[in-house]
Amino acid sequence: MVHPALEPYVRAVREIPPPHPSTQDVSERRAAYGELADALQGELDDMQEISDLEVRFDDRKLRTRLYVPLGDEETALVLYFHGGSFVLGDLDTHDWLCRRLATDTKMRILAVEYRLAPEHLFPSSIDDAVSMLRYVSIHMSDFAPDGAELLVMGDSAGATLAAVASALTRSEELGVAAQVLIYPTMGPELVTDSAHRYGVGYMLDLEHLRYDYKQYLGATIDHTDPRVTPLMFQDLRGAPPAIVLVAECDPLRDEGLAYAGLLEHFGVRVEILEAEGMIHGFLRLGGLVPETLRIVDDLAEHMHHFVEHASA
Image 1 (spheres, helix red, strand yellow):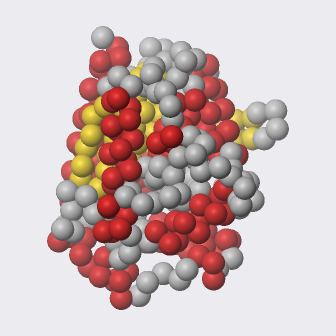
Image 2 (cartoon, one colour):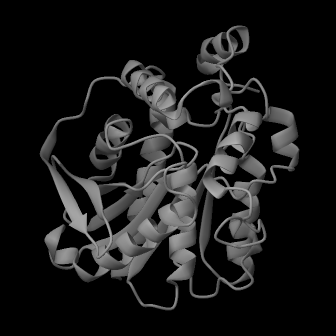
């Protein structure tokens, strides 16, 4: 059952459904996504420091934003990948959320603006996530004090990037204390019970997500590739410990739980957090729905436990 505080927003989406993405130019969709982010955000948390930085690779450069919270405990740096169905989103659309996460965790957040589809097809965003994870692991001193732990985190499509990057680099000893996966999408098939139950009318419309997967993957991609469908990984031994946060009324809930189970099968420590009554993307509603912020607080506490365990 949807949380009472979210019912007005769910009802509004059902009464006036958003247009199918195929009817809009991608630039129009991105502009609308940005306007929605502005409308949803609450008061911005003050930071001790915010720095826009550019990380250069041989064939590309990626924008990042470093958030240093007031009261920074200097214990960890969180490498963060935003959501947006691999097509939408940037540093600004998730600015409010990154500030809130930094404030609650008292950890530094390094948000990444990875390449988006359809201009950059799969595996461009995966390559960006892997490259950034390796880069930050090597250059931790550029972003955080000595001794700080590294966590990799993402929401929705960004959680998929975080999961895949963590899996692909699991044997490289990058020192990742935890992967934090917030309502991840685990592939384009979308055939779970929660997908059928919540696939229409609960903010995330699965037909829209399927369309975006096509924009992201093109027509020739093998869906059994674990970079596309992480549930197809044949071995995850040595992957970083994980926190998997799912929402009860999210069509992606079951696949997030399935990935948590797959990690556990290969001996990876996993903590599962299920947000009762919440919908996909609920963290971005924190500026309007204070009830969601309790879950951010709980998530921050779990992240601290992983950092303390890594330091022990």
